[in-house]
Amino acid sequence: MSVDVHAAFDARQTLAVADRILISPQAGSLQSRVDELLDAITNSGASGDLICKTLVQLGMNFVGRDAEIVGYGTEEIDTALDSVLDALDNLEGDHATGVVNGFLDDMKSVNLADSLSGLLAERIESNLDAGNPARSFLELLKTNMRGGVYWQMIGENVCKFGNDFARGLEYLRHYGFCQVSTNPVLAAKAFDEDSSLDDELKAEIARHEEWKADPEKYADDIVMAATLIALWPNLSIFRPLAMHTGLKDYMVSFQLNPNIADQADASIEDARNAYRIADDYLKGYDKLLGVSNITLDPNIVFKVGGGHEAARKITTVLNSEGIGTNNTVVYTVAQEVQLVIDAFEGKARAAQAGKQVVRTYETNMGGRFVSHLREVEAEKLFGALSEDRASELLAELASNLEVDIPEGTVAEQATEICSYANLKSLDHPVILKAAEAAGQSSDAIVQLEADLKKAGTVIARRVHWIFYASENRPKWVAYLSNTYGLSEDQAQWILASMDVLPASKRVPDDTLHALGENMCHTEFPNHQRAVQLVSEEPDFDLDELRGSIGHEYEPGVAQRLYELPDFQKGYDLTPSLKDFLENEVQIDLSGWQTRGMEPGDWPEFGSVQKTTTEFKTAYDAFLVRCVDLAKEVAG
Image (tube, rainbow, N blue to C red; front, top):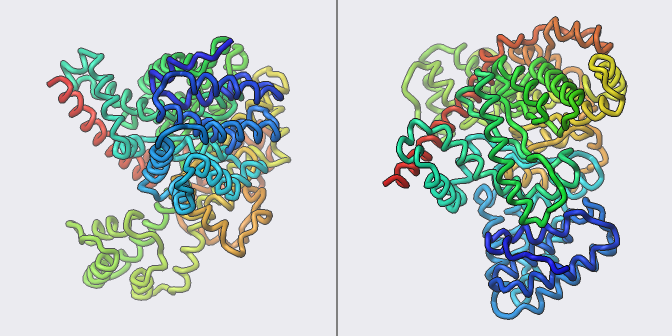
């Protein structure tokens, strides 16, 4: 029976056509399926550009590891790629040049080309064969992807990776990236980079008379729609592989409204609503994929702001309903451990009720934690000086950093000038000068900066050890089985279904020093690029970094950092958590201190306040933009 691809082409969903090859795969059947799909594509009556774009995307599934992931063999993948390349060679006209340039422009548009996909585009473009651009593009993409460190790390199960950005996922999927997360900042950036999203949002607004009549009243609904529109491509890109794994990977994280993060019931209802909308969208997309006999829930999880105690209820309830979570705005061992336990409880309830247990995440915002600690120490240096000397050095620092001196007191000026947006490191000449003026050794500040760069990884390693050290895994399986009456298989999957998700990276070591099982790094595009470039340096050795999440820095690092009060709050457990882990789960925590923050204290932590303010500001600015579009539609 011939393959019908007309509906997908009518919707300009070329990826859905190319991805049909990943649905219901059977090893050994690839060539016959490719022949059938190629016939349907070339005889569809679609424009030459659409046909060429679809063929290139089909080829990407063989150049990348997509076809391998779903179970096809190496030889049949290579043969299938040859068939696609031959089909591209036979295309008439100049379609290939325009299509390939479109892909390259799209790759370079991600984070203004400061990205891994931008790096790929640069290297492909400089070697592209203008006489045969489509074949050349795919062959160069294959060479450059497969020669990269992410290809090696993912293929050798060193670690899992995700995209901390709303765009560029299609290219990363071919490496094997299996997670994507967004927040209000990133949703707004997606609209900045892709003007077509404005048009999609306008079309959605036009379908809602009540939105047009009173945009301010329905502002949050419009923002939710806009954020979901930015996510539709990601849900679509991951859909075939999420389907293949049964939601055990390839999840898209959607951040709930930060303005109601302290309201559990309202946040839960928002999540349920977004889940229903995503389900409706994916039912339509599944049809474009040619899926007729597979029913799958949305491959979406919800980012729950962990800066409020309400996050505990939201996390437990959503997981108990078979809806996954990704806790964010979290920095400390106590926060992360508590929220993982809450997720386990929800997952156990879901398993008891026969509901699905999906891949979920516990974000470790290590980079933001480090930035907060650095900002505090820089502010303390200026606070130790006379007002005149502090003003003099702050003026020098502002000039050096090319920022304006803000209004306000000296303390307020120090806070703004020394924020991470401006000051990236304490071993800055003016900061060292301030340290000496305050009677501190510049060497001590250099050492502190070196230690601070490791602080986020130190937290991630502690959290990972509690749940996933070889000596602790069996204890968690036993605890889950005995507490909730689960089978061993159910308990093992609940434990395995949670990944620690390092985020907000600042330096490549934030990735390279935290590799291992049940680690999924979500990374900014520029960070991905930086890691790739570091891996190309002569002294780089991936073998030394395998399992680095289980490695330890020399003891002095944690000892020196522990002198910082906010690091103590980040590093320690609470008394109740330590008691639970020792007596209920039987984990040996001798020597661990208990100065960590109780849930009621989470909102007051500096990192929480800074990130929450940033997310709320970004959300509110995006809201204004969305409301303005609604007013434009309403005339």
